[in-house]
Image (tube, rainbow, N blue to C red; front, side):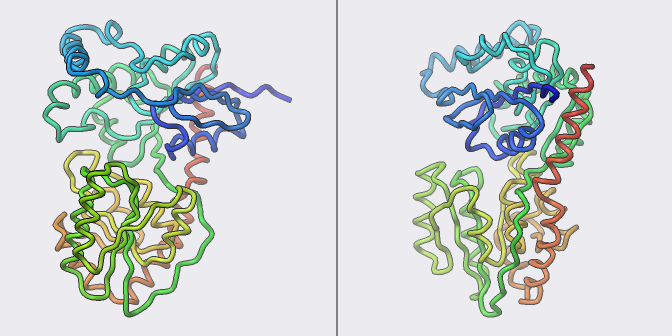
Length: 388
């Protein structure tokens, strides 16, 4: 029996709660011997996990600690990257991993790129960019002043050294290709696994809308609540939210209490989401374009709407709008004003919603994790072969 190639997956997220990293593990584990470096308490049989329990909290550094880091980044503008970059989150396991010989490394996000190349020791590296890092928080003046140059130089330095690259959508892939010397790149969306379920029936007298995800101020979920002030009496909205920001969640609950057509419900686990939301009619997302990444966002929830066989209502977010229009999945507002999306919803008939849900059932066979996995494994094999 041939010996399996040994791969290392590097991420600076909670492995058990990062669906994109988890999908990589699921795709690769039948074909390779895997080790995983990340945060959390995740464990899986047959996979060596080198985890830190919690990601470091920068707030715990205190004001002088933060000033020291920011000052160092400013001074580093004038130095070669290799002089000032070292692992930002030291793991006790680094010394152990440094003694290993890997056939390839998959690095998630830009932050651990220097660490990945240090551990690679000449092995090929595949970089999975979960977003476009040179504009990651461009809506923040502090970020632009102190960190934007860091992420840009990081990408300029390390992307050309990678043997393969993946990212989440076409427009982000095109921006990387425009600005950097990229290796072969594949678009691997955040598509959910295929769910073999049927669309739920449509009630002509009511239309049930659903949104699920984290309660974070940057997502402006209150704007979807405002949208409900403009829809007709057929529509109701339920928000299935995790308490990412307890203060913001409390604000949303106060807003929901003043509206008879809005309700906040408890979240379910990730594997349960698609089955749970299947009973609704349309999934809704109205994400303000405060940054490049927000304007081009193509999130997990969008593909969970598809697998749940729902119609979809979105603002004119580039990638979501493209797929909604291309596949006939729902409606796209003319702008990001809540009233604009409400007007699109009010114009719908029951026959429209039935058609959207039937089209979602067709699209579910096209946009799923299994098809992504085939392409990811093909690229991984090419990356490994590049060393030979």
